[in-house]
Image (cartoon, rainbow, N blue to C red; front, side):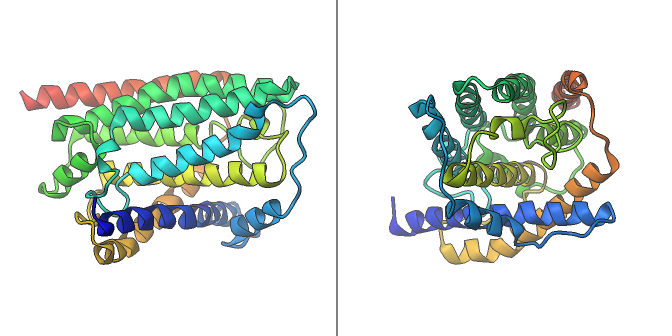
Length: 315
C-alpha cells in the first residue's frame, strides 16, 4: 500500500466528513425556499455541531455502556461507508471492500446499535422509534440490495468500483432496468434518510417522528455525533446514487491531484441531487406510518422488475 494511496484515501474521508453537513444545509435551504419560508444559512449544520460539541452530555443514571457507545459506532459506520463508496476515485486502498453486501451490512450495523441504544433507557419514545426504525430497515435493505444487484448485472460484479468503471467507459445508453432501479433507489433514499414522505426531520410530533424519537435522550457531543452521522448517511446515499446512475467524472487513480480535479464534479452533482431531493420533499405529503410498508414494497418490486427487464433484454 503506497503512501499516495493512503493519502488519497484519507483525502476522500476528510472531504466526506467536511462536505456532509454542507449537503444537509443545502437541502434544508432549498426546501425552505420551495415552501416560501425564510431559508436557514447554508452553514447552519456546522453551527449546530459546534454548539452541541461545546455542551455537556447528560446521560441517564440507568444508561448502559451501549447507550454511550452507539453514537460513536454509528458515526464510525457512516465514515467507513463514505470511505468505501467511490466518490472521488475507484482506485483506493478500501475499494476492494466496496461490495454491495458489505455496504448494506454497514448501514444495518449502525441501525441495530442506535435502535438498541434507544430502547436501553426504557422510554416510550425511544422504544417506539426503535420499532419503527427496524421496520423501515427490514423493508429498505432488501430493496437497496436489489437496486445494487440490478446495476451489478451490467458489470458482472457487486463491487461499486467495478460498476463505476464499467458504466463510465460505456457509451451513453438508457437501460430500462437501470431506470426502474433508479426510481426504487430514490424511494429507498427518502426512507433511509428520514425524509418526506416517510419521515419529517423537522418535527417532534409523536405520531410521525421516527429518527427524532431515536435520539431524544441524547445531548451534547453524543447528539452532535448522531446529527453528523445522519448527514454522512445522506452524503453516502447521494454518492451511491451518483456512482450507480451518473458515474462520469470519477477519477481512476490514487493521485491526490486527480481526486482534487474530480471534486468540483462531485460537488456539482451533489448540488443538483440535493436540489432534486428538496423538490421531491416540497411536492410530497407526509404519509401515515402504516403506508410506509407499501411504499418500500413498491420500491422492492420496482428493483426486482428492473432486474427481470435487464435479464429479458439481455437474451
